Image (cartoon, rainbow, N blue to C red; front, side):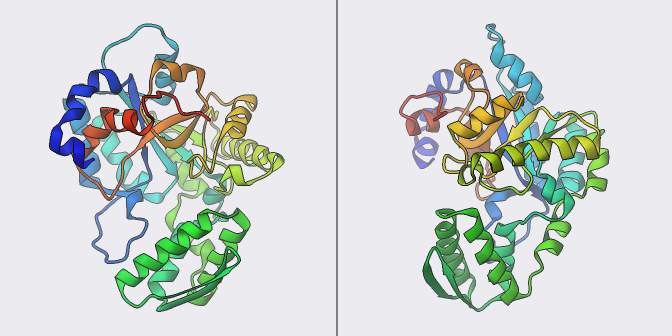
Length: 340
């Protein structure tokens, strides 16, 4: 990013690298909190920045369209010229309804909310938030993770940040069962109630009802338990996909056409998951692999990239660099589609 900020090279490259548009990823939109220890801050942006971003897109002449319209744009052979973005929100946090929706209503922009049915039920685990809350309360961590003992002093915010990062990525390298076991151990020691945490942070089925009826909203499936699907056997993946769709439809009375792979990077979703989403009748599948959309993505509707609006970099200038597509042209060595 520093190279593009300093050189402005993305502006020269943009006509060749920006593609047709992009799907944007959001998680949380809420009041900005100043915290010394906030390991999940990348997942949240302020209400003011969200509002400024939508204004900025409109001022740039970028169309904000629905996910269905994105698929239609990819399928057409006609280039409409005007770039587009679609807004997507993962997980179903309470602040989507409380803070993000009023902003989108003012701007009259459509969006897709990807709901993990287990979060709406209050039973699935927000393990990354569980770990954050446990680390916040503990002065020392001592657990077995990945077959090795992990110990760390966590008295200061800096010590907590370092220890959290090391343990988080060790767990991300392993399986779901181990990850949840370690999170449970930390929660027990720190007296964090996982179910209460989920219920306090995520929209319940009752709270989702008005969202499902909203004229600007589309509801997509995000699995049942938010497990990294590539870590599961095929039968479990099918269950996560089909049961989440069925439960959302039953509870909210809406048709569910789109799927979002939990975590969504290359280690969490790949060719098998893309093929299953297609075979199970979804219209699309979105990843968290970074990138913009090109006409070639019409052949890869179940491996669509997205641009994450990162809470650590709430800058319109940096967003413009990403939307230009130039960083991804370098990152992917000129390849427009990364669907392996």
